Length: 617
Image 1 (tube, rainbow, N blue to C red):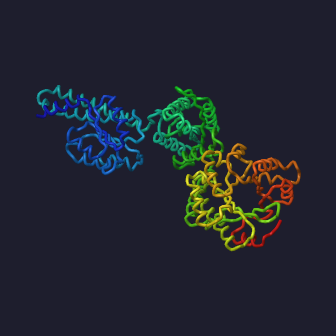
Image 2 (cartoon, rainbow, N blue to C red; image 1 turned 90 degrees about the vertical axis):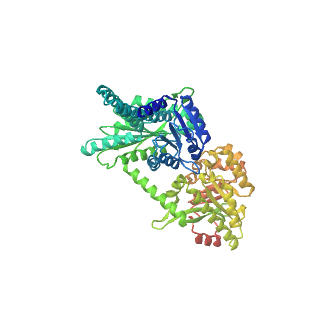
Image 3 (cartoon, rainbow, N blue to C red; image 1 turned 180 degrees about the vertical axis):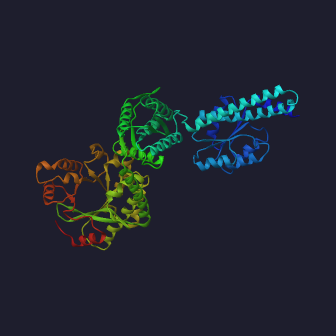
């Protein structure tokens, strides 16, 4: 009876393997099914966990590819049902999931999964893991067969027993080889064949131990990030991107020593470990060689591609307590290289980590500040240089930190821009400024028509609902739209000219005034002035500060004034601090000005008192 069972199992082994794919995404089912059928497998498909369980009532598959995230019954629940059923408990299950958290993988193996593949998957990886699991299953069946033969013949022939033992040894060796292969797959990148982060960190820990035992020992970590890889991926496609990564790997290998460790961390990020160097100059020379090598184009199958990289360099020695900190510092230096202009390297120094920690603290404080409404708005008067009277105010944000006092915008606005918090801050400032000018009008503090200027950041301007946000604030405050002027920098126009033009036209239809801030310091292209409905050009303080009463100091101001006249726009000069500067601007017939010569940005109470006093300069 036992021998017959073995023969039946052998027959099953020789059959074409049957694979059941369970995924609620039809496209995934189609792609995987087509691929595996081409590889010679029988493939069945199920869109839900219940369909999969029903399908197994008819024919038991040899292997199941099971998606985790499915409606009604997820992959974990399906696997638990399979493992609790004696008929299906031995069927290997490979989980497919976009989830890449260690907890999700642990849970997958805890419910009985045999393997785990993270989406988006590589077909080569899927095929390798499928073959491994089917091979393991075949091995199990062969083991059963061999055990059955042993039990039947052990008493008859000692020689046959020895044959079976040798066969078992061979299978054990094969399993060891398979384990070695799996370990290699776990520590290497499937696309480039390079070591991955896990391998790199193991090597980094080893070198740090050497440095801690020998204080003279030094090594270096280079963290490399491609600067234009996303553009290439988006424009030419992921296949070309993969081809470029492979070509980049070959080029990096060609300029590095055999004792250097290069690893791919994912995407377009690479790390390089230089063991036993004399000083930081050795690492700098390697970074220079890499940048020089990347200055030449990559000849791919159908494209010639140019790419550069930013490199962070960190010197490793006994002073580090954890290997992760060395990698962190190299990463920090890489981001500094990007900020400084990309296509270059930067060496880490401890002040950069302190700055990063300070930035993180400021970011945390910023988030709390938005929730707790710690932002104030100060108002700087804008003066008519023709009449000398106040003609408007610019709303400027200040941060009233609970422990550090007033924090100037230069310390938090760039971080707010980077993190996207500027959207909430900008909306808050716009609302407060509109409330303020409406309050002044309601209190009848001025008979003149005054305007409130509010800065709109490039990131804020890029929001899809920016016009709706402005409409909502205008409606809530009941401000006359003609009394509102939005100041926008040139970069907001250039980044997406078509949508910017549409937004500006909508604002113009609402009779909201528009001003270009810091004109002359950015792109300053006359072409966009023709296309965009702009009322005012604002001369940056860097031009005004150079005015000293001489014609040589005028710089670009006369040209900007001429452009404004031609385009029927007005000009506001900011940063006026001296009588000479004011006199020269009046000689140029500049219509408006603001600066410390008239008043600093003032709190609401002081700005109100200044408006009531109605001074004249």
